[in-house]
Amino acid sequence: MRTLKRAGAEVVALGLAAVVFLVPFSLMLLTAVKDQSQAADLDFSWPAEWRIVHNFLEVIQARDYVLLRAYVNSTVLTVASVALIVVFAAMAAFVLQRRVGKVGKVADFLVLSGLVIPPAIVPTIWLLQGLGLFKTLPGLILVEVAFGLSYAVLLFRAFIAAIPRELDEAAQIDGCTGLTLFFRVIFPLLRPVTITVVLTSSVAIFNDFVNPLYFTPGDDNATVQVTLYNFQSQYNTQWNLLFMDIVLITIPPLLLFVFFNRRIVAGMTAGAVKG
Amino acid sequence: MTRQDAGPRTGPGPALTRPPAGQAKRKSAYPYALYLPAAVVYLVIFLVPTVMAFYFALTRWTLFDSTFVGLDNFRDFLSEQNLRIGFTNTLFYAVVTSGLKVVLGLLLGVLLTSKLRLRGFLRSVVFFPVLVSTVAVGITFSALLRPDTGLVNKALAVVGIDGPDWLGDAGTALLSVALVDVWKGVGIATVIYIAGILSIPRDYYQAVAVDGGGAWHRFRHVTLPLSWPATYSVIILSFIGGLRSFDLIWTMTRGGPGFTSDTIASIIYKQYQAGFFGLSTAGNVLLFVVVTAIVVPLNYFLGKRQVAA
Image 1: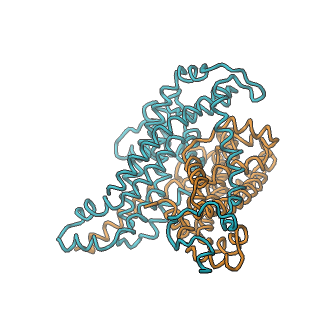
Image 2 (image 1 turned 30 degrees about the vertical axis):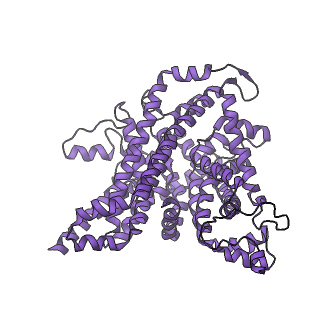
Image 3 (image 1 turned 30 degrees about the horizontal axis):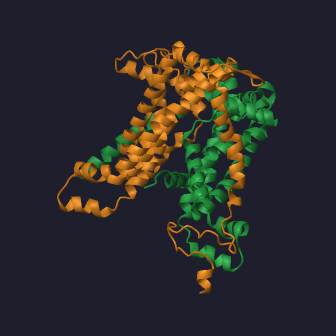
């Protein structure tokens, strides 16, 4: 009787999950492979005509291959920002964790402010323009790094707290301090949390829509998320192409998910629960 | 002797001693220079604009030159007919999304830490939307929520309910967007709760079992109070996210119909688009004040309860 009840509950849970979470994704996939007139219905009918290759090519070629350029831009943006975030945040977190004092308190306060304060957007544009970095990829990279540092510092800091200080001391006796101590002894030990930071911040930056919208307007430095926004206004009726675009830009996060599912989840929890 | 000279030895765990001042000989093994790269980027790109915002909010501003106009921008922003709506909408949105994420996250967390056979699969399914871009989610749900052809209303029609125009109706637009936000974000809340629940010592559950307590008893007297740190994290994270949220609202309704689903963040963007940079920045300063005024006391209050629990 109990097992029967449990089996029943499991079926219900599975069914609900399927409806609530998988239906939207099947709509994406179905619509992406339909022809234009059938796609306009936005329903769950079976595709009368499979236009996978055709839609794919049309999305890629649209607006002078903007999607390919956007893919390159997004990749450069994500890789560069994440690399800088990892190195900068790990170094700062190391000192923040190890060296308590007035400077540390100020730094601590700034890290928390970075999590809470909404970025002042137009003044940031003004500043980037002053530096000659507005509408450029390096400018956007700096913005993503500045906005992403706080969370990464917190993750690194929690992890560094678990590394015994004896290790630092042993290294010091061998003559390692500062940069050498950090890069030769500490940083290699941070690998698990580094992977977490890489995964979470690359998903966040690759999927970011707001910052590219403000800081790199125009097609030249478009990122993949913004192409979606462009498609939406240009192909207001061409739902099949819009959804093909959605499917194409969902592939990188999907791959991350397939390969690192467990690690992502473990990392999110490591950072999220302070207790 | 030599060992002690090598530096203040505090052992593992939190540092309790501060490094002795005036030790000229011993250069710290943790030089502040390691802060430098992070500090430079953070100060220049984040802090300078944040501080400058307080000045530019008081000006009429074209990015190239600015004339000081005092509090005019704030007056304009606050007398903007849609602003009062935007203000309440922002609060409503943050409360609804974080409230639902707590409730659903806790329920899913309990379910997915139970002895379910499909646990692993279900965890993945619930978490996946977190990784999909907000804009893609917004577009997909706009399709699902269309009044006549959308799946949601078709399903409701089967049961005999005449569904509303979810995104086109002033009464439901903001709530619909908030629900989609919950759909996308509940995976994070769930994962946080899973971690919180798994860190509860098993002994408590055994104690309840010895006392003959049932499932409800276990939940009410063990899981619920002891997953408080998780609740705290979920509330703070999703509340801040809710107060600032922009991309989902922009993708799904553009603040419409009319101004009925505008939030502070979408109004800021509209003012920016229209070229009112000073006004937009004033909006940003207001958002800053609102977020701080809510999150700091909330953090204090929740933190106090956490100690008590």
